[in-house]
Image (cartoon, rainbow, N blue to C red; front, side, top):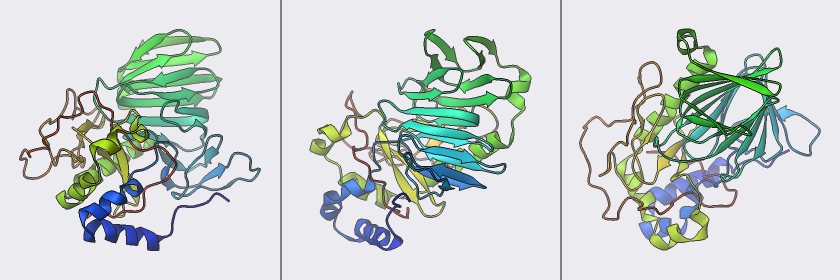
Amino acid sequence: MRKLRPTLAPMFFVTALVLALPLIIFAQNREKFVISAKAGGVNAVTGRASMLPHGNGEWQQLTIKEDLEPGDLVKTGVDGRVEMLLNPGSYLRVGENSEFELSDNSLENLELRLIKGTAIVEVTGADDEELFIGITTPHTRMSIVRRGLYRVSVMPGDTTELIVRKGRVMLEGSHTKVNGGNKVVFSNNSFSVAKLDKADKKNLDALDDWSKDRGQTLAKENSRINDRTLTALASGFNDDWFSNSLFRQRRLGFWLYSSRSSCYTFIPYYGRYGSPYGGGYSRSIFGGVFGPWGWGPGFGDPVYGSSRGSGSINSSGSRRAGPSASPGAGVERPTRSGRERAPREQLP
């Protein structure tokens, strides 16, 4: 059996440290609040789902306590759905009767293999931010390189269908760029690209609805983080910590656990990360509620439907002053390396 995350007792102890001890003590323990700079954390499971650990010949029940390793397989039953954390701010959501493998869990070479069924990838962030999420199916290999919303299905009849509602995908081999509003069908060694028609845009199924609800739930949990927690978290970071090799990754933020929803939400370091479902992540370490930089281009525009329940804007609507430091200026400030999930820190 895979080693599970820590028990609740040390988690509550860590929570007490954050909220009660002086900030200098928090600074000494800040690593515990930063999720590993690797993908694979299981963030939600509904219905029947199981995993086959790499090198283990027995399938076992999948739970939200699992951290998938390279080579691990996951499959869902007729009522199963799974949400997995990718690079900070990005999520994989797999529907019923599906199977996938986490081929590589590093942020630099993140790779998923969809064997059968359907997966939706939600990628928050700025429209011009570059990233990499590789997806392989029996018929093709593609790379998600922009914020957006993507649906990949291995279809009956030996085809793969890719729907790009918003964002950008690069197809391996042909160097073809597929932007939002397009659909690609792969079969054998060929593919065809077409604009999404009205049916593609309106005929949303249960997985689409679940993915949207999950996206709004996670953004709402981010909005509930109070100033005290942000101040405590920010006090744990300094220039030396940011500049060392532990933070030479791409995504500018980390995951923090919310006991209210029993899942991890995303906290950016700077600025605001927009969600393709509308709204986004309005609370960041060095920006307060709005911060001095506000929403970036294209933030808050839903791909489809309303942005109800995103909870991305606070009720006062006021702009807060940010830190005196400039927002990044080309300096990457991502999560640390290593493989340690953040403790179950309750968001006040």
